[in-house]
Length: 116
Image: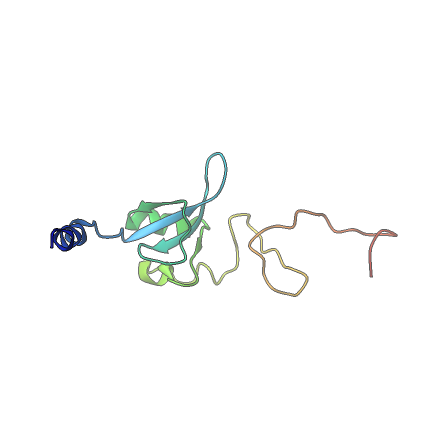
């Protein structure tokens, strides 16, 4: 009986999730990687809560929105992801014609070293 009472008390005392969170990268400085809604299941372990204005600013500055919870539609900043320009100012393209969020680490090889 006491255990059930404690569980109920714990559920009532649990704070509500934040409205918006930003997922952070690895390493020194931990740059913002993606903006999520507060209860998004795709958010990684490294995240922090942000308010509505900071989430909008991050999206406007080029931080990508989560493709699952779509915070850009909830924040009213639709179309930023569609323009295809990331934080680097260009749109890298993979070998299969799909856009890549990361610039290539290797420069293109020309001349006799190039593979067909």
